[in-house]
Length: 289
DNA sequence: TAATCGTGGCC
DNA sequence: TGGCCAAGATT
Image (cartoon, rainbow, N blue to C red; front, side, top):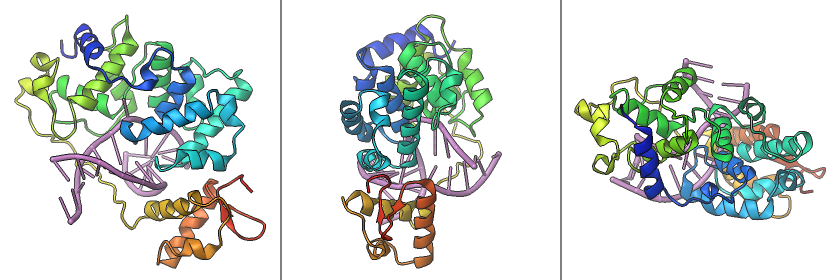
């Protein structure tokens, strides 16, 4: 049996990183904030911002009372700033409809903005100890190798991926087991250079037993960044994050030479609610003026 | 389903 | 040096 529960739980107990959102005193709200911030963003960059957020907004209702601009400014350069607005909207829903308590139930969590299949189950498991399949990119890679003997996970399929993990979950300490699977993928069974010599389940890993064949699935789509709207939007937002007062459009025009792309991006930021235009025609983060 | 949405560090 | 990668969600 690959990915033996007791083996991984024991390995996790002695190896796991001491992350603040894993500490027993961390609230469910703290777990939720961490999971949103960690979507596509490395732990090292999240940790300092997470501390600031929890100190400033210890409860959902505290964040719900903040403006969009304050939240976006505090989000800093974590990337994908729409996550900050969705988290703010989730905080408002929790404060207003749920008595300021983060929901325990997966389906209720799924109904909140910015919370999808992974985050809903991560919160249910890590904040409340619920037994449910928590499947992120690390877990998909670990299962692809250790269970299926492949070099890497193929294209995601939420139904199949969750099924693969569901059958592995132990009845006791399922949440710790899920955390261990993720930690194994993050520290040992990594994408580029897996540290198989340090792996606690080396002997039963089907990939290793197969002779570590290369990934043979469809080629992964690599996202471009340089020159894309994503880069331009980031540059525009960075100007507004760096000023306390609204700015004239010429300040924004300076960040990108292609006027057509620049204006399209500014429009999309306005549509997304990430930027606001004042009555005087100036531009600023929303809700601060 | 596939494209879109930031940012920065690493090998 | 630059492609690859990082605890996804949404449409």
